[in-house]
Image (tube, rainbow, N blue to C red):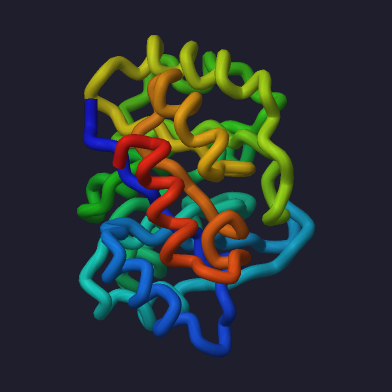
Length: 214
């Protein structure tokens, strides 16, 4: 399986000093940074777009762009040009899942597919992807508690996608939940408030990394 990695989510970072905070986490060992993009439709909140991706591309790590937006196929080119290394779309957000994943890969990015807590794992059947993302909270808001039944869902998704695909968990991931997620088959661990919402983000990152075996 791919090596486990923590992907800190900048949704919970201090936007007044975001490059500084992200730089500190990279110095601590992070090789992937998670960027949550929300449109106010697929999920109620609004968040960042391609300019934020462009602002971080010089940091030299993979930018993991999570599109929580309707009809993501319309926005792929902009995020590719901005510097995304991986783009993840939601199975619930478009009728063109196969087309959009292919477009992402054809553009030179890794392609991910995400499912919400209420979406069956069968959404991953028969699609070519580089990453399967299991939302372990309902999408849209940081700081939510991990849904315990997500662990069984992660195990089932690992069986579907096989050993070579990254399996990402997003929501309520911290030093307590990262270990069980890793045991269930996760390899990418999104952590936002559990890192950037702490007094010492670097120490929090290291604690989660240790728990996940990253």
